[in-house]
Image (cartoon, rainbow, N blue to C red; front, side, top):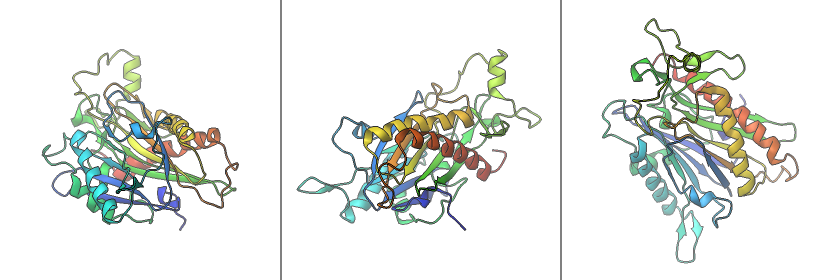
Length: 318
């Protein structure tokens, strides 16, 4: 069966660590080939590490891994374990006296699920690396998506499950575009083509409340008392065409359109929505095969589909 997930891009592997003591975890994307990356954060409460290095004007272009984690800011510790894993294997930016692994990371908020003192740590990141494989990505309530929820504007008790989703496309030219998304949002998740709610805030009878409709009707006028940085959808888009950091930054920006197609409301003051875009070039794919504009449009498509797959694989209800 053909792989339609992020690992269909040759030269990368994905590993999950899922915490057994409460719903949380981390997901690691390892790069076995040269990987250039850009990033774009649209939510009002992002939690990240090493993202400044990916700015087009800054020196470092290559990344060696990307980490997505639950646990809010505490989950950023998972990246330390990934750095250790790569350093032990001599992987990193050669600075003369050492090789320094470049490992950007982003986190989501899942502290409401179980004991909030239990969060992904350096050992969790290390174990996710050991589990990394190029097999089709496992989706649903695993890794960074283990404690994810969506539709929280009416309170966590009315929310639905979020999770990890992944989807990719292959063009006749051989160009591939794929996404892996950890879906954890204030808003509802909608089917990107059929325009029906797949997961979100629920009424007492179990039906979906439709948060966007309730905001339009004036039934919801404030996001309070949601705590700051309490949600956040994060992910990675990968392409197998050779691209620059500037081009990948634009693709990351355009990929957020996929979040907007599948999640409503999105990019709120209480979401830290962050997407990375990575080029893992295939020598058989020419630099002129597809430009950044077309790749960005495709990135939005695969992100929207990955979001829908994430909540579908997670099951219902919360």
